[in-house]
Image 1 (tube, rainbow, N blue to C red):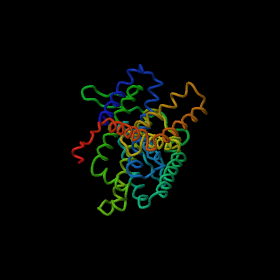
Image 2: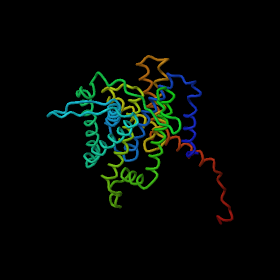
Image 3: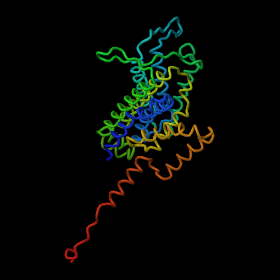
Length: 344
């Protein structure tokens, strides 16, 4: 049953726009929710499977957004000492690929620097890194336009064999693009955590001294996890930039990281479907409340829903429901009475 859940959810998401009648408002909410869910899945690879909390995860998301936007727009900046960096615009797909590589490279640097320390030190390093990147985006006006924002970012164009070039401008097209990228990221994570690498991550999370004693390289394992996690967050940021077609330093807001953490924890950290379920609930809940409540009341209900979920299911929605279904299946198994003759 649990194996069929991802397929059923994917089928439902594929068919969902048909039921909505291509409603632009709801499609926009689904696209933004999907992009944040990809970010939450990438964060879950660190928080859920290695136990490392990154409160600066939005930095990789923002790096992906800016790298992809600048790759597709081009730039001409003065680096000092008479040196100028000139880049001609490249296709948006190249921006998506470079955003993934650049964010993954930053994840490698942060991993190598900070995984020699753990706990609060790693959290401080990630927060500091996110703030430094935000200040660079805000103050390097010649490159990023600062608070004026990068505008006219081109939409992603795909080359289809026999059909020519296909520019993804409509919300429906972007919805299926985000769904495809999210599915690919989910499959990559499922492949990773289901193999030897996943066992190494879980071992470090549950009992690091024991994991080290059997030959697991902690720094290397955690760094690889950080690279893959950052790369996926960078891909999500690229999708965000090319969908909105405008990007500014507000993309580095700390509140976005908090939203991703809520999605992971409420859905069930350390589970494959947890960030997806948590992302859909907490991504679409504000949209559902907006027509019937004032903004202040929306946040109150948002917080109450989170508190209730964590109070009733402390491990998250997906692990909680799995445990509940498991108990019901055990109770449904008939108990055979002991044979009195055997007891004698």
